[in-house]
Length: 155
Image 1 (cartoon, rainbow, N blue to C red):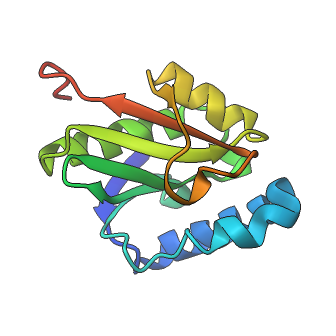
Image 2 (image 1 turned 180 degrees about the vertical axis):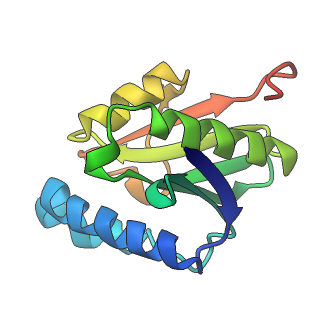
């Protein structure tokens, strides 16, 4: 049974999932991890989604303010045992829905070029490559995406 909740970054299951995400990214990002990690604090995350399968936290994601019209997707993660089941798509759809409810017109995000599954997910979800933004402008491992919401995109 799948259950999706909306919460904030203080939720204990989100904290545990993000810890697992950070451990995974230490390996993927290698020597760049410390740079990226400084932009991944939980203090500004008031919009968090956790997906449970049979009461087990299986995936998460969040968004924060990027600018007055744009939300930035952060901390997307699926526990390895639950990958390949479309959970990340469900999380992203729920984040987009919540962002639209909050009045945002678009979402942006950054991921690493080495994260093939994440890059494929964002392409599938109609995110468009965009020039690297903010602190990622000079990072050769970063790839940034944007998705504009349409009027009839109410979920």
